[in-house]
Image (tube, rainbow, N blue to C red):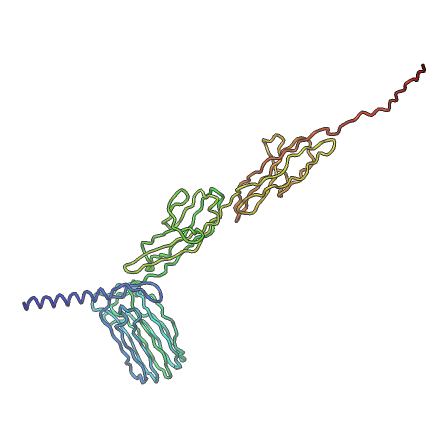
Length: 421
């Protein structure tokens, strides 16, 4: 029984240690955006000593908070108020296990605030050690003579040590200084991985214009540079705005690749004009979920839906006037862009040719020398895209040679002789 109790105790201790290790590697969502894995550390340290640090309120406290699963807990370093010569203060976390590998980013979540009226030579650094030996230093601030303090909001800095390491410390060194200090540096989390949220786009959809029946593509690509720790396994879902809500697209005769970064729109019908498109990108990593919604791209479909109608058939006479009356518009054209006109004429109602400078909605034809047919072409110009001409009804101008009626006029006088009985 005693042996069983010992085994149970040993197993409990092992489980506690393992669970503590897993807890220290937990994925956490940061309040200033993004998601990260806490560094796997099991030691912490703090030091507020130095050679001659005669300052009130100086302290380095709570270094274990830097790997706390409460992402808002923090370790604090306060330089204090007074006089300092060769002062050195530090907060540190590390591991007694395997070293952290070289050339892998580490992300430090920290902030600083307050105001210093302090004449000093000092510097703040993050220093990486291996077996107690310094292997890499990166600075966060440095002051000479007049130190007015650092007010920086909570933020992440990315550091890539070129050598393996087992401890990182925030170190505040002061060669010489004196004055009033009301400030602190806060270190919240040390992260071995960090993923941006929301996801950002390298490219966004842009407006496209096509002729009716044409094709276009919309592209939006998530920023996923391999040198940074950005979400993998990204999925895309293209959507169209139906006037009130965004609706997911599915592959059909008009849409393809609706789940890829580039959407293809084929054989665009007229009713797609002014459609709005966007893509929603999603990704997840362990307990963290990421989403990025792209900008909106519009599709303009350039078309002439109806060319309109013109009036009207006429008859003109060579012996009176062979100049037709103005051709007018009965119904206007239906187009998606700006209208451009081109009138045409024909002598056989089969082969039509353009009339020079006849490019308005109405047309006043010159005198005709034979029966002639006319029609009006209209095309749409939209965002630099030009549609083909669509033609109106045909009107006919009939030419007659003689239209006047010739009358017979006589002055003959008829006389009759009178007879008497």
